[in-house]
Length: 462
Image 1 (cartoon, rainbow, N blue to C red):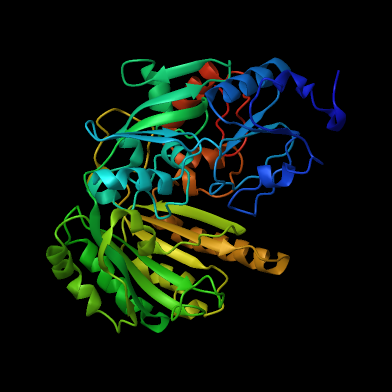
Image 2: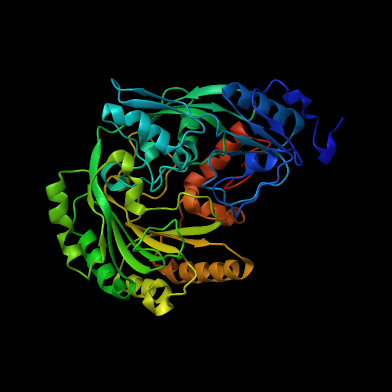
């Protein structure tokens, strides 16, 4: 028996406590829509999971009916539209439990970093969040997790102690370095290729405050600030975390004055040490070019979003990235040709950024994982807003030109969370070394031989 839309009988999902919806149902559109509006999902069935039991039931049904499965919490990484199949929405699963004695957090599948920060702050603790605390913890961490404070503390995956995960056979498993260590390895940097994580336990940092913000210069001073920042990054201690960003901001109310509608060069700063030491370290940047806006200050860790000031409202975005071996004079010249003032104020990319890597991110994880970006000294990523077809075409062309030009300076690899729309198997494999990619394929064959988890940045079974 099948339902309308030619989907297998979903009455087998009647034990699920959350909503089970199909196209045409009143709440369907809200249930499938994520933060990135460029990926419009149209699954045959969407399940609004309320806990691990709902995910177990959904996965067992998917296995019995051979229905492919995708997972979404916040949808910040929704670079690939889900068509047909089953979408599991974990956004209702936001529980966060803090153990101040062990300095750990147990985080449910749909929790955002903002939920973790709010729960941890009363204990003087914080998590290794990325540039937006509106993003979900689980998807971010499964891709390795590139923290704002990464040079000081490493990748978010490095701090994970255990996972609770439902594998495609419908089993709820607990995995850590001692229990199913291969599964634990694949979940830390291998994205969601071997199961649906229902919760994780991660270490927290005793860091209630930090010194951070942005130094903004008018766009015509991009070259001076970039060259000064590039030289400066070779002198700073590992704990100094920074990124150089070119911003062409639209004139919309969501962007504060005086940045609204402007063309800017920015250095974003995050320093976990003493504020006076941080202020002394960044003094050369403040002298490198005329500073129009300076937001660097002591802030609560929970206010981390003020450093990179990423959009907080859903939008249609095209992102991409490349890991860089180094930032040579030729690489800087090429970057400026593609994204600097010479490219024009009407250049279609909203943001082009170079992140300083190295430090703790260059050191091996205490427990081996699948993160493959530890050899990069810098990292370039970009975002364009796909407002209309002409803009989308211009953004795609500018993105392709940028990464084609920067490829000679790259490692040949990307980061899975910011890879952008995944292409064929060869393109997807660029997120890992060949050895790690083959190991992930073998793990995929072990835990998901039918390739039920085939959406997004998926690895095919060996």
